[in-house]
Structures are given as structure tokens and as C-alpha cells.
Image 1: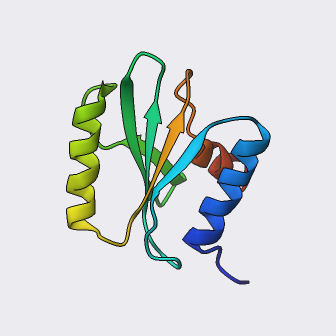
Image 2: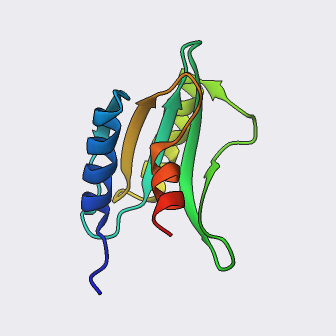
Length: 113
């Protein structure tokens, strides 16, 4: 069975979010085949949660914050994303406006196990 590429995953999740009227912006394209994805979950109050996906052998794909606090300021989020890009220039960065902090990529992973 063919593996879903990162480019296809990002395009599919963004198309689904568009249908649900969720604002998503592709801030950085990465490696089309296997690039990691960083998601900036931006709330109405200006605070941000930055998540990335990790694989757990028992639970599969898990999305978690790349910072210790529940949420960080927009400036702190930008610094965290830049730091991740310096480690992995092939990563993708997607910003999501979400008043409830819902990560559309995590929702996708839950429905496509």
C-alpha cells in the first residue's frame, strides 16, 4: 500500500478545514515526502499552542506541545517555530485559527487509524 506523503496530508487536512470554515495558512512548505509538520494553534486572545506529531508504538500518532506551558505568546511561538526549523529545514509549518484549540491534523489521525 502506498504511503500518504506529507504534501498529500497537508493538502487534505487543509481542504477539510476549509469545508468546515476553519482558517488555516501554510506558512512553510517542507519535504513533500516525509517532512515533519508543526502546527501553530492560534486562539482569539493572542495565545498560541505549538504542536508536532510523534509516533508512539502503542498509541500511534500523538500530537503534543513543543513547549512546557499550556500556551505561549505569539512571539514565543515564532521563536519556537524558528528553532524547530533550524533543527529540521524540511519541516512544514501550518497556522490554524482555532478558538477551541482543536488541531485538525490530530482529528485526522484519530479518524484514520
